[in-house]
Amino acid sequence: MSGHSKWHNIQRTKGSQDAKRAKIFTKIAREIIVAVKEGGGGDPSSNSRLATVVAKAKAANMPNDNIKRTIDKALGSGSGDNYESMTYEGYGPCGVAVIVEAMTDNRNRTASEIRHHFDKYGGKMGAAGCVSWSFDRKGVIIVDNEDETLDEEEVLTAALEAGADDIDSDASVFVVYTAPDDLTAVNNALVSSGYALLSAQVEMIPQNYVKLTDPADVGNMDKMLELMEDSDDVQNVWHNYET
Image (cartoon, rainbow, N blue to C red; front, side, top):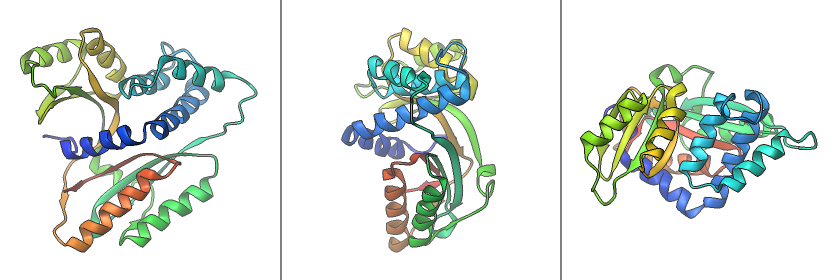
């Protein structure tokens, strides 16, 4: 597939959601809280950042009641949550580019943890911007086609009419690309048309990929990603590692 991390990476994410749904919902709830507080209120129609997170939440099958409760919590003056968004960049084995997006109430704790994961498994945390230049920020919507009954031309037409930039097919999915600001509108249009979505979020898409061949490097990279993705503070891990 052009531009997007391969479907095996999407499968990996989907499997994590299936196995750890409660934890996924907790992380999305944290994103909602930050979006409300930093993005300008609890109305998705006037808070584009919140609208994007709500689209992500719905694609992950987070119940509407959960979404509403989280927004209300963020709006309440008594909320004790005080998270901030942090981004860390660095390199895995053999120069694999890694971007870690986190939301934390203790930046020193989170930075120390992420640095430890880099160092322990043959990588190195770098300065801001050291690898992000080699990624493109795009809205990515994964349309489920597991039963292979969807017509690619029909999906393409629906996506483009909704404002998408491009569409790819791979295995049992269609991958719809949008400008980051168009993600919500395209997502809503596809849902209204009856398509089932596996995910919808803004992603960092690598411009190129690194293939690891040494088993030790593969093992270190897999373990590094596993621990980063399992961290309570980490929201997303983007990389150009091709397995």
